[in-house]
Length: 376
Ligand SMILES: *Cc1c(COP(=O)(O)O)cnc(C)c1O
Image (cartoon, rainbow, N blue to C red; front, side, top):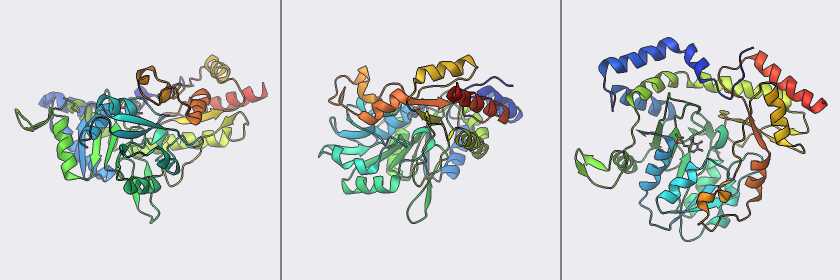
């Protein structure tokens, strides 16, 4: 049996080797390493794929969030709603721009912001919200957009883990993660749904003025070369990464399907164990399973993880500490307040290997082993 890994980036490369090697070789031959033609081609293809009118490539998903937030011209102290159960980038970028993150607890089953819970966090200073499409499912955007509209909040989607996930609105319209709010952000970190061979990110919007501001922000605030209209950052997508991503984008739907099949296997074989809760499906969204995350019940999670490790089965905790308990945020009012759901999730979740290169032998090995834990 092939070694078990959380994600098998090399295995995926080997399968696409000819296409990827050729794409890399072409970039080297033209040597347009910065802003080369592959960046424009990939950006156009990503716009076609997602349906976003404007796609602004940048250096990573964190910069995408920062650029999105900066483009809204908010004032220091303006409040931005963010979930407690997420990767730090969602909250850190708000704080870096001197805005005030306001933490929202999440739904215990879907791990996502529950739009029905938002209103109680809104004050006159609340100006924006960042729904995070965690682990590959979209937040229930129709009701979220309704609340945002009522209070005039800007919506920045953090779609770092959900590129390729579809959300269906009540009227039947389908939109892709990252294209429903004012701005969407994604990441091409190697293990994400669409992963580069290094860092990369992108911002999506349908608003031309926002697109202009964001494009300028990630390029030193440049309007015309050597004329700088605002203070910006330097955040580019490498030509090499764009060339690799363009190859992989043409396989993204296959990647998603492969991970969905892994999830279907786990659901079928782990669904009846009292000590595990398989991932709940959020309403109106597909699930691209950036992570397959179970909630452990009534057992010592560490003990189960060690038991798996001894059999060569890796597992990970995403995330071990909620945002409201991160030392970095000790200066904010939410620090160490009570957010019981996120707290409990951090103590009980566990992610299993779920990637595009898994075969049935590996899956059978994992689920049989977990079943024996129950019996043993
Ligand atoms: C990965 C990730 C980011 C940041 O992306 P980078 O490319 O690593 O900067 C932001 N938000 C979430 C939810 C993520 O998972």
